Length: 238
Image (cartoon, rainbow, N blue to C red; front, top):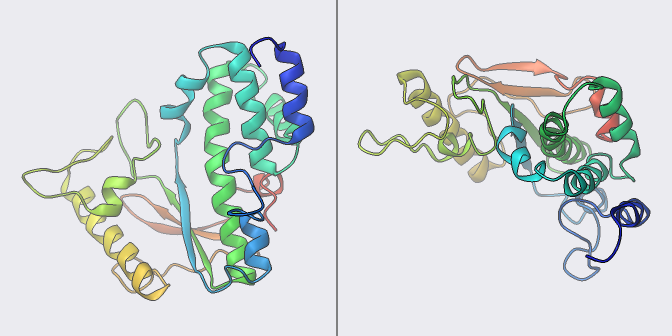
């Protein structure tokens, strides 16, 4: 591979549709997640999924240092977003961010990788399976990274012991500590019952095509309808 020019590797990545993520081997992974749900293989498994508001700020710098490697990575990520050769997403990126640096494009693309998968799988689970719920993790922070990748983990596990509070980009304010407790209880309720409702947060509807409602988890949580707008087309959500 080291002897091959970047242009050839780029062409092969498009021709072979090498998605960024798990590869289907026909034995352990026999088909994409959404197909498995539609076929009934995961029809009785409810899904709760989502993304942080600034997923890419932590990840992008590691992949944008060298232009050729970054370009190949962008192509793989773009293919994962649309489950295609990546060209529709890359065209969108060029049209909406014409003056953006490679790092800025990589940052946005990483967000869309996580968000597209969450929306696509949850919508399929609501229509063909046991239900899907989507959250947008947007708890306010002054950290330069913003609400970055993995910022939601301390809230998931309620790491708020007074002697050892662990937040990645948030301070241990009373509001955040209370929200962490509510969010953790919500996750526990979902694990027990297959439904995240009834644990202290507001009523959270399934993610469905009529309005694609999500839980926006901020210091004041609320339910929002289709926050992704036209991006759902590029995400292949139906």
